[in-house]
Length: 450
Image 1 (cartoon, rainbow, N blue to C red):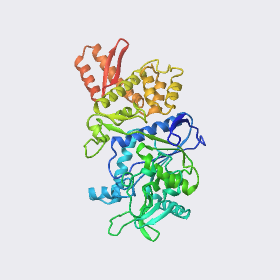
Image 2: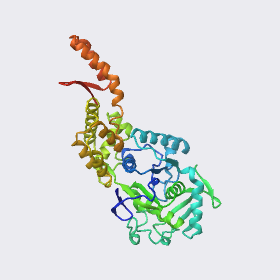
Image 3: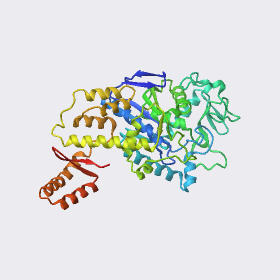
Image 4: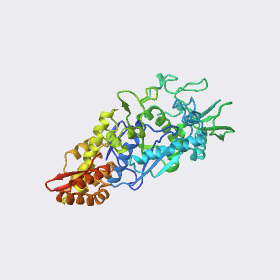
């Protein structure tokens, strides 16, 4: 299997240290609002990563975190905590906000038929591990204290700039992280923030004699170390994580523990909508609920995402989503037709190996989709496609067939007796179940309408 590795800036052969324990950490959402479709793309791509690893015979141990404290609106060290912002927006407590949007995210996650992580970790459950990590960094001389927190001194970590190829000499304050009068370097970042006098921050814990809370980057370092240990096999995220969040995680982890944090770092690219960045100010944010209101299932969207490569730039529009929906309907109906065929078990000898080989080459799902479109597949081939992509192409066919076949037989009997009113009534009944009947020379077969 081959993957792009941000650590080396090239596609490399991937082999885990332990095939029975492939350690993967996925940066999860900050749970202060509904996840939009741009947020969800990354979890679809990493679902493909997990499925591909498993079909290659590996056992995956994956941790997904949920950020319910410490992620400030600037993505750095200034601004309001996003959970506090959500609480103020909706007139609820930060705990109510976190619980509500965690439930909403997990509902979206499962509607996309994504493989469940080994464990889902809330940041607030790891405060003691956060404190221990801050203490270790302080003990080793990597931090200094200011009026508003404890900061990591990036000048003490020699390879800080390597991961994102940062030009630290020309990094401007405010362009990446806010530069306060007490910061020694513009790239320094908070590992622990103090609650300021007069600041309303409901989530706080005592450390160093003051109330405070962990920095956003620290949470991922502490959780991944506590649950998986270093080095990880693969750390995933979005390309926006490279210059700040993941750079800072590496600095914390490797300064504190003296070992490589992760052997592979893999990132997905952004999507735009009608050529523009996804933004509330532009009014172009869509959720899965918004898509459903327009007649699209979460799995139609999942197929649209997988039609593109995780490293490529993508532009979302409803014409392309409609085409993806049509493609998925076509595949579902090919499965339905195959299920009803007497030759449904005649699998092509090398199809499964070929499609897995394509996807195992840096998750090349577009090439695999082209192979599926050009192949005449047996039922077991389609079952393999479902295992690899999780599109629920096969899952409902047996149940649907057992439910509709008696109706199809009753319709055939009515037609033979020239009772066309009854035959038409049965056709309407089937249409209400999202089923249509095709009358073929070999007899009637059912297909999905949408």
